[in-house]
Length: 303
Image (cartoon, rainbow, N blue to C red; front, side, top):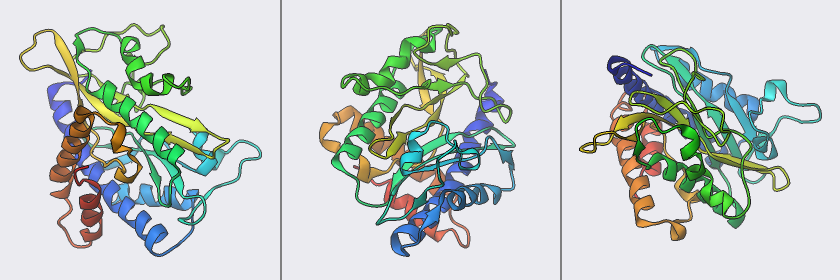
């Protein structure tokens, strides 16, 4: 559980992290989509790490960046540096294997970040879009929920899995873990999981991840969307908690099937992207940051 002073710095470091990520993502899309380059997982990992190390407040990576292209993205917590036997490093290209899962983060002076985004830089299949949308709806469903103070994460876990379970599919990892303030990226005791062992209640000031996923090695892709969230009090409702999303990084609009979304889900996405644009865009004003700001603007427009 974080103090109010720690939470203030936590929120600020996520805006910084969003600016670094926007600069990375703009370069990734430029090189792959516009310049038709082919990038290995190692090159992409170096790009995302380098973007963060441009920040003076960074203390180090919160964990080795996970970059999985195509079917490697279906290996949960895959690392190209320690790949299982028989697994070769993937290469991303717009006309070849065009999807990549990137799980990365850093320790800043004021807090810790941990974010997963799955990007498709080519032409996704209808099945890919369907599964991406189901994962996103699960992340939104959990992130929008209000609950009595002290509710354990195991009670909330099904909210993230509901659209996958409706089709008898699932993911084989927990939905959320606790995060420390520039300490440990996996810091308990709180968590969100379908395992019934952790009965620790969620309380104001805790920070927890929200990261549902879908993995299909046969189809050749993995999808995970992860934000960090702060547990907050619901205004005007004593004893009730909710979540405030800390992560300030866009969600890829082209991969969302808007036709299956409710008005509340569309409003949540648009409100989230508006927050990201206003918070992060203001930091991308310096020399050499125009491409990052242009990319951020494009990916934070309303649905």
